[in-house]
Length: 140
Image (cartoon, rainbow, N blue to C red; front, side, top):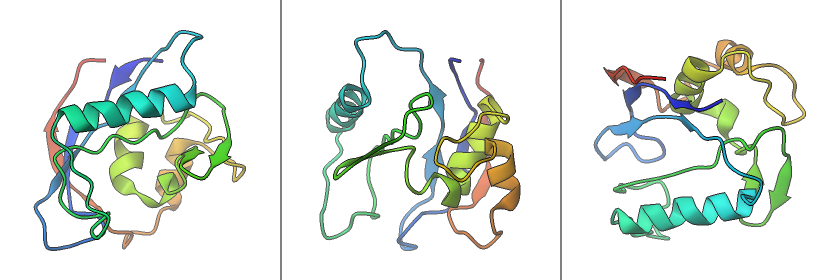
């Protein structure tokens, strides 16, 4: 599976005193030489290239770019600085809505069972980080 969801404008997550975010899920097909660790390192390097400066005092504060590794096939990985699937994937509508655009029937390999669409349907409406609207439709 490869492709990109539409871009969504969403409420800020974590700190309310900031502008809305723009969120998109991108699915990649990678060669065998890519590990979850290598992919995370590439994502973090791209954040830095795009001007991201991490403020430890405000981990959920404003930022120019935030790239998260949500899933890596059916891999389950728990390390101090890398968890796959993303540990808050089921808590974030701004992740599940665009992920459902790409792969609603994809099983989330986190031991809880169920698909992306099921996780989205089971999410409480007061979760925070709600979708304000779609910005554009992307080609898949």
